[in-house]
Length: 477
Image (cartoon, rainbow, N blue to C red; front, side):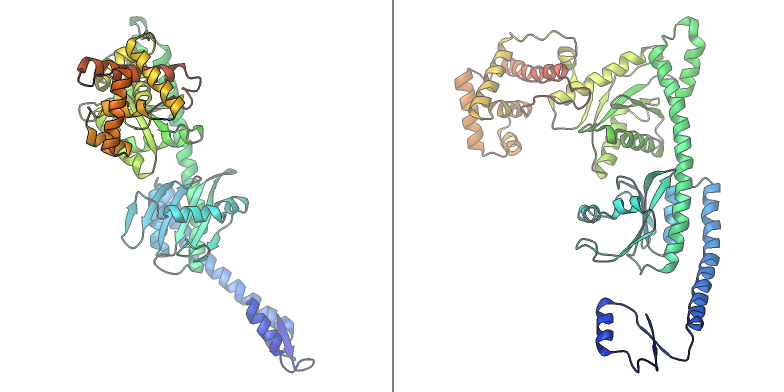
């Protein structure tokens, strides 16, 4: 507010100044004889000069970042360039706030983990920063202490592809204060990020179409002698020379919303680690055909993916087929990998891990889908009786026995895993021995009991209506 002093006011009232200070509202005092047009002219001139200067400053930024796209640079290089321009750390994440790339300005290094802690992510969600950025897609400034868990100022801008939010760019005021220059960099950076994301999406979609054709060929062709040329072309596209393995990945708990992210994550990590193989989507699974198993065996590749997934707080399970040599047998080995995963997941629902036919051993033969399951078996009857007793009396004898057998009757390890005292474990085992006539010194009985427990779980898995979507099974463990 501009107040002319001299004709109607000799001075601005003290009460008015105090109230303006309280509200952080600017008051401008000027002599009566200065026309308002002169004041607005001076102010507008200053604003225009600043805008021109800002445009001039942004031209080199625009040229540098546009060249990055021309040179086929990606989001990783973009984050590094933006960070070096503004002198602060930069993070680019997807629409679910999963980190795509983080560049630490102080250490001049890329991070695999997000700058944001769990508490900071919750704070961002609680005050609706991402939501309001989608509603009003402009650069947003977030002050320090906006929330008790936000400890530095930030700039946030959404990245749009067409009318869909692809992700977000953050400039984090961890090294110096946010400036007007940072706004100009953010504006250009958001545009370039959208170009890079659009380009990568187009390439990704083209790859998906090509992969879909290969996968359909694998699933539909029998590759007989009459169509040997098709076999040769498919093998060439997959990079097949001699032997291969099928590796299956599934996220836990299964979510259709996250399935696309799991595929992208696996595909990116396979390429990043230069693992020779092709990644497909198949229903609820991500399928990897590994074509150099001497240098990159399936078990080692699965371990690598598990480590990377753990960094991102993702739970996955994996199934591995035996080594295959003929592409015409692909469907058989694909089913083998899926069944290995399903059996392992059914037996150890709470322990995400990798399952292969070689690891399952006789369990695969005994428990695979289609194998006869004798519910009248003596040991299956014992399992049913213990389970019924647990339900009626709200006890955990079946769980106790299962963990005890899995730990090779190691009392210390079992009591630790069950979070009970060893005396409590001893009492439960004595109860099981006396009430159900079980001899834990009989190795044949122990093997049969463990098979009965696992076959009950696997049978429940295969008869569940939701097994393909979520793998929900009744599991005492």
